[in-house]
Amino acid sequence: MKDASEVFAAYEAIRARLPAMPSPGAGLQIGSLIEVAPEMDAVVFDAFGVLNVGDTPIPGAAERVAELRRMGISVRVLSNAASYDRDTAFRKFERLGFPLAPQELVTSRDATLRAMDRRVWGVIAAPEDRLADLPGQCIRLGDDPADFDRAEGIVFLSSSGWNDARQAHLARSLNMRARPVLIGNADLVAPRETGLSLEPGHYAQSLPGDQLRLFGKPFADVYDLTRATLPGVPANRIAMCGDTLHTDILGATAQGWRTVLVTADGLFAGQDTKPFEASSGIIPDWRLARI
Image 1 (cartoon, rainbow, N blue to C red):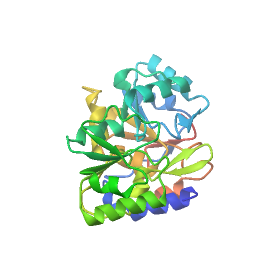
Image 2: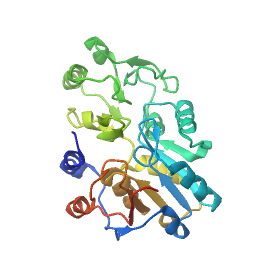
Image 3: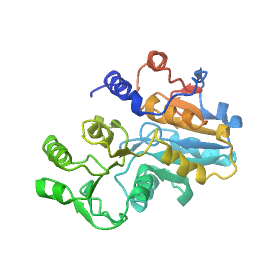
């Protein structure tokens, strides 16, 4: 998948697996989040495409987050990035200029780890991931087909270093013996400095079996974790700010949250999003270039 049109079509092809869209938003164009801040008690930011692109912070994002905090609005980051443990994730955001308190970060990895039991898990992870936060015994999956067969369940956290040969080993092993498969990042792609990277959600679509479970936006687990950090805040006073219709906007709308689609740096960078919104029926409450 090379561009937004291909990604959009891929998400539409799996629409039946995603939450239903209760009703479209108004799709109002705004200049900054400050214009609609009085309607919010909390703003939940996606990371990639909203705060950063890969390892590069988006200009002005850190200043906008600080401004919202000064206005008394709670800030959260809700990320589908499952490649890092919490300590590493916090250090990354601090490097990017977004220091976060413990309750301000929720990731799809958090939700995935909650679903793991004490079985022997075969883990697909970034080479630098030490897997220290995973429960029980883990087998790091790579090029040895026997490792796939030994695993009692599969956890897919990162596509870094993943390739077609390893995907074939995984599919063969699951065809031979069905087991739980936890996909720690439901995204199909992520915006990077060099283009769009294929993420675990992409590889999940071709896996066999009926024990597949996806974590991260647009699925409910991560929204539940985020709501737990915002006690007493009504759903309609929470705004999700993201760059993807089928994850950020669809998932948050299904939870009764308000939504803001960011268009300058993420999936739809440089494109008019209105045709995509009209085709899918996924329309945000507000639309803006950068936060």
